Structures are given as C-alpha cells and as structure tokens.
Length: 107
Image (cartoon, rainbow, N blue to C red; front, side):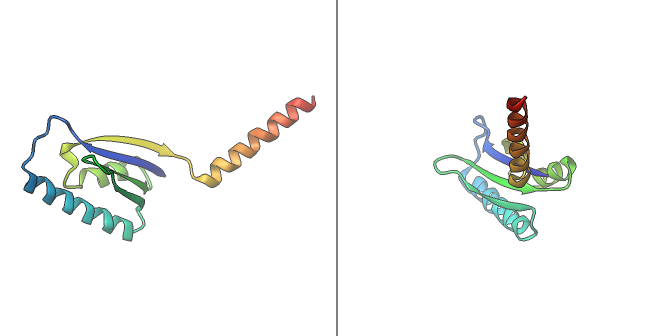
C-alpha cells in the first residue's frame, strides 16, 4: 500500500533549536534506514518550512501507524496522509474508463 505522508511542526510548538535539530537529524536517519529497507520510496525536507514528506510502501495501515509513531519528531508533528494508487493500476483504470466511453458512444 502506497501513502503520501507529510509532516509539519505544529505552530504552537516552541522547542529549543538544539533539541529540534537533534530530533530532525535522528528522524532523517530513521527515514534513510527505512529507504534502505524499501519502506520509503522517496522523500525530502520542504524548503522554507519545518516540514517534510515521504512516499511509503507498507503492508497495512497498522504498519504505517507504527512507522510514524516511532519517528523522533512524531509527537510534535501534524500529519497529512494520502493513500495512493500505483501508476500502473491508475493507467489500467483510465484505459478501462476510456474503453467504456467508446462502447457507450457506439451504442
């Protein structure tokens, strides 16, 4: 299952810079490990924001929950999570819909 995950520091959070940067470094280190394990397919930090995003490939919602809650910054972030359809499946569905339109027009 593919998910787009965006995490952004909550506005009301005010953390000392040293603590925040330490958690950020630890989080990106964990994300790099997840990338090496094939769970994170792509991602990065957002320029000019205290935010980042990743595309994850997990087996279940529970695995995604577990992955996110283990990140050092987890308790300080607002999360946006969007389920994704793989491109090959989206293409297949689009071709099917186009075929259905052609069939309907021929009637």
